[in-house]
Length: 431
Image 1 (cartoon, one colour):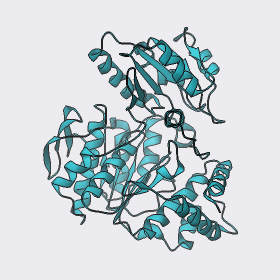
Image 2 (cartoon, one colour):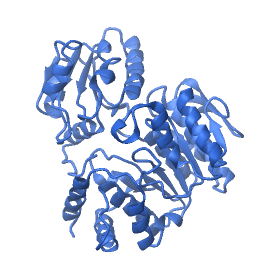
Image 3 (cartoon, one colour):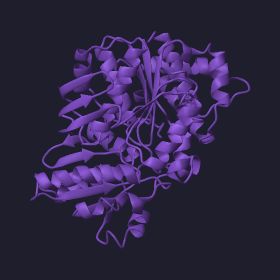
């Protein structure tokens, strides 16, 4: 198949929806020869922060001279963003070749979902590339997520918050139970900033698995006003004056989780020097999360899409307003229909002078007009535009050079804005 035809095939798999469970992915991987067992793995879950943490871990391991596979989701513009080796996206030709191989392995009786198919593709690609280690971000939940077929060196659960309740449950404890499903027998688990009831669920799971627990602010921490100059105090390692380009104080927690994962991996045989830690942290990149993509006015992209992430974004905008008291903030918001716009926008609306609702080009996106109607009492003067590009143009027309335009509510929206700014087309495979 051509790459275009391959992407169309992958896009078609989304019609199967989300089917949580491990039977299909296990059968498919068995037919492929268990590629996920040919390299050590670091497995990272959580509601928010897991992608940033995975990117930091991968960057440090690469700086240490390791050949590193990184599997994350969703992508912003190009499907191939999901699967990288040493920071380089999987080539189009390899996607096509591997998809054909997986189609043959699945026939005639398996019908993998999009995420199951993509996960198997990543595992096989990493095996063929002879990676030294793979860093995997959990897709949805953990217990029955397609990535949960590995025996990792270490696992991490970064945060617990309300998201994907239709699949994971409507309480933090229920969601914690699903996330804790990645904990394996005798494999150490890192726990990030998680409230006590949810944390108890995770620790109880760890006890049943005899898995050592390493907790933020107990065995490790990261100190400092901002990631650009911070200090890590861990189980055995301590580093002063670390520098990370990722924006936001919340990244201190992600840095801490990443560095303690590095400590645990080092204890299990991966060689990582202090120089690698410093270099990898200094050069990490993670698009679409507090990412500045324009100046005068400042254009900020943040893929926050649940209430907990909105609080983090609001903290950042509060600090920005404190540093720029004469400037104004415009919010461009687009969300999926299964999210909670009132809860999400509660901490953000008081920080903005202008609000523009729009929608990503996806069937499951909430219409901008519906968002405005739902938020009419809180944002009575909000505007609506047909497309994200129109929203950005509208915000720029009314902004001064010192103002800030923040695009948020969905990674799909962020991806469309990035593609618009780059003048490129989006992959039809989204989500």
